[in-house]
Length: 373
Ligand code: ADP
Ligand code: MG
Image 1: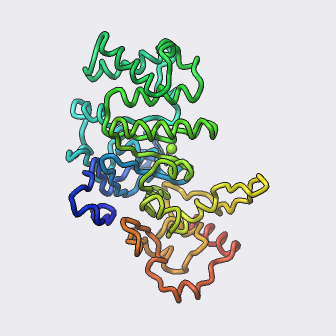
Image 2: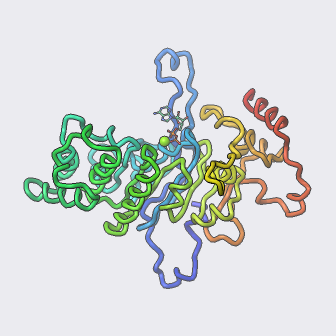
Image 3: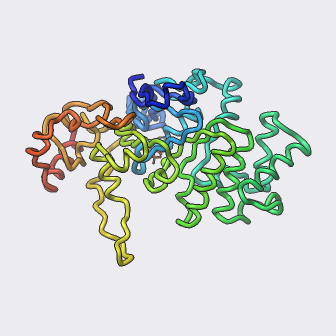
């Protein structure tokens, strides 16, 4: 792996206190056939959706890594591939020292216990005809962890841990509120005592007050149970509250990553800056300030733009380089473990000062040209 995030040392590391690498993904790709139909295949339509297109990522033990990006950037597909709900099209996934990218059937069983994926909609993971207590208890049987009284004791303890009462063990999913269901989802993920939990938009369906409660709970559970987290969200405020490091995804690729503070205080990729600009700000008088959103739509995942995939929407587009060459992730000077993939990182201050960014109209032209490719 070429990632400097994984090789950087700080003073603390001299004592070898560096946490171990729990999950390491290298050049992971997940492509889906665009058309599943036999006719299309027979007609030779073998186009693919490049949902995840060459991702390197490491999660250390005890760490929370965030993945952010607009809808459709490939976050869920990456999370599912790293959890081995999907088999990667290419690349390697090493979990606790073991290659798991081609594991199947029986080999995957211990992985299913040790890596838990919490779905965006907790209802989808719960059987509507079973009590939530039964749903949480089920993995204990499936994985031969506990049965009988021991099983129910574990489930009741977990319910208490996440702030659910014993009476809720016998409730059906539809009888619970959104926040309670999300707590049940957490119990179901934690009951197998996993090492890694992947959260997919864990609080998107909840109002802001509930979001804060659930995020606090997620933080507390991590310390109590010694967990590592991968947390997916389109909401930068959410990842800011819980993540140690953040990776920013655009069109199936990681375009910037680093410590949370560095991403927020020293963002280098124009896409990251656009996302930060788009965070709603509340003005002094309590009204929402105007958001400087992003121009244009996310690109086609079947036929992504050449060079830097963000170039058709980039406010800092450089003619020639940006559509011509794909920038690779490189170190951001001064920030340990901070990397960005942008041609501007190679340019001098003088070049930056002399650059005239394209106008809104010019950018529209760039976008329509790239769409014609
Ligand atoms: P995100 O979670 O960031 O919103 P997704 O991973 O859900 O992004 O989707 C990334 C891209 O892959 C999108 O273009 C989406 O339509 C496509 N995609 C996701 N899952 C599938 C699938 N099972 N089959 C085909 N295309 C898919
Ligand atoms: Mg998603």
